[in-house]
Every structure is written in C-alpha cells, then in structure tokens.
Image 1 (cartoon, rainbow, N blue to C red):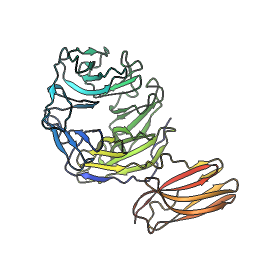
Image 2: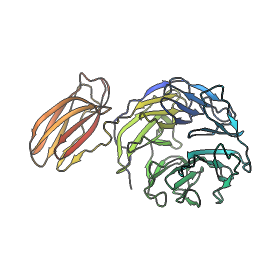
Image 3: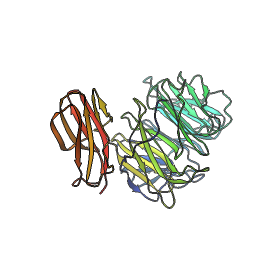
Image 4: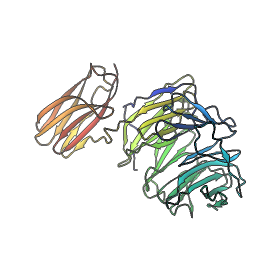
Length: 423
C-alpha cells in the first residue's frame, strides 16, 4: 500500500471567504481571479461565476442552463446544454460568449477538458465528454471548422464526468469506471478497482502519478498508481470520511476533500473535511481540516490551488473557504540519520507542551518554532545535544492561535513536526 490512513490531529486553518455561495467546480486563473460552476444552485440552474479577490465576492460571468464544464488557455471555453462557447475575456461584459458550431458532435456535453497543444502550433486541444464517449478536436482562430473525432470507441454505457491528463497519459471517469490512455488519448483501456461503488474524482499530479476515489454506501477508497494508471495499489479505505474531490498544491501534496461521517450505513455527514498526503511516500501528512458542522452539515465538493499557493474549498451548504498553503515547510521529516523527533504533547497547545529529541551520537543542534509559512518565530534550543533522549518544552503562551512547526536542525539534516496553538 502506497499511503496510510489518516492519523494526524493537526489542522490547517481555513477562513470563510463567502457564506451563501455554492461552488461545485473551481478554476484558478491569473492573479486573484477564480471561476466556479454551480455557485448559484445545482441541476439546471448552474452558472459560470467569477471572483477577482480570491473568492470574497462573486459575479455572474455567463448565464446559461446546465453549465457543466470550463477550460482556460489563452482563451476561455464553456460547455453547457447549449453546446460549446468561447470567449477571450469573460470579465469584460462587452465581450460576448460565442457559441461554436457543433459540427458532427450532437451528444450533450457532460465534461470538458482544455489545454494548449504541446506542438507550439497555438492550437488548443479540446476534449469533450458525452453520454456517447470521448471526443477531441483542435481549435484555432484561423481554422475553427475542424470536426470532432471520437477518441474512445469502448462501450462506456454512462456519461463521462471528468477528464484530465499529465504528459502523454490521459484519463477520464464515469460514475462506475476509470479509463486510461498512455498515448495521448489514441487508445484506451478500462481500469476498475471496485465494482460496488461510485467513482467520485480523479487526479494526475505528475506524469506517472494518478489517483482516483471511490465512494461505497459505507466506505471511501483512495487508489494510487505510480505507472500512469496501468497498475494500482490495494487502496486505502476510510470509514469516517467521504471523498468527493482531489487536488494538488504543486508542492508535492495531494489533497482530498469531502465530508466527515459517523461510520453508519448509510453514513450521516457531520462536517466538511480536507486532508492531504505527501507524494514521495504517500504518508498521510500533517494537516486536516474539519469545517463547521452546521446546521446544515457541509461537504467539500471542490478544491483548487492558485499560483500564489492559496487553497480554495467549495462546500455544498457552507460557502467557499480559503487558506494559505505553508510554502516554507514543504516536507515533514521526523527522523534523520540517527536522530528522531517525537510529536509534542499535549497538542493542540494552550500554554506549554513537551517533546523529545533522541540521538545516537552527540551533535550540535538548533531547535526553532516556525509559523505556517515556514518563517522562524523563535529559537527553543541552540547548543550541544547529547547522546540519548532530551526533553524540551514549547512555550506557546504568547503565540497567536494557528498552525506551527518545530524543527531540529543539525549538520546531518533537518527534522520537523507540526503542532497547533489553540488558547
């Protein structure tokens, strides 16, 4: 198994950006601009909305019935029950969305994936998921009349819900299966890890890494492949959370969001949840989040990260939330070459907390507290660390509530643990 089940009690502080707002999909653009789908409702009343301040205020950017897909290159693409539309500036009210001709694609859109072609041609590669398979076409302004090509001739039997890629590896999912291509979408193979659940999300954070989640009536599963979707691990099961969305922050972490449950059959959603694992070893990492439990109880249904390392979480009934990803500490290492750093106790910390540093040889060390962005707050210890176990204290009385780290630095390397201050 390539990753372990969640065991940490640490929290990543998320703040409410806007309360009465529903974001089913979130798409970061340049700067502080965000786009979302489904923020004004579900089903037939889905809109494209945009925010220019990282989610605090939202505006309607395109009003159309059944909006279900959005893509950004140097142009903007929107799929809906009306078809595929294009715009060069969705924020400009004077620039209308232009509905592209359907050509030979007559099936309703159910998913959209857009990226710039890698051949330097200036074309955009457009992938359309429908109830009748996967379709592809290239688009440029000079030659916009190219027809669609059906890329997957596999009998799918249900609508395509999501499409993604990394390098030459392409993936899409239906409600019951995932499909993998290792030749840029030319040929496809069905890969299914369970026959008794719904596939809820897929993610390709690197060219060879691929994740997908499955929800059953009582358990969530998270599966990982490290060879482009050809083989998968046995999966990790979660009986107290649901998984509805996957995202990566570009710093080596994969985040999974959904809702906390009581473990009953069927489960009752208790509160929204966001957790993460590290790609290098798959170990469940240092942060989790439980959103307010309501009423009503929320479920995280969308996750995204901006270039500024701002995390955006959309819930179904408790608005849009955001957090600053700690970029200064991108890896939690608890043991280095004969030195081990224990987890502090108690944690969270109200005033004082204690931890241990164990070393097999004498070494000069510096122990410090870092904030959530990896900036030094204060030194805890500086000097010679003897052989054996040394107990140390964290004085947190003057620290504002939030997420922190304590770090031991020696000539042999660095060991780091997270902790939370909660007065």
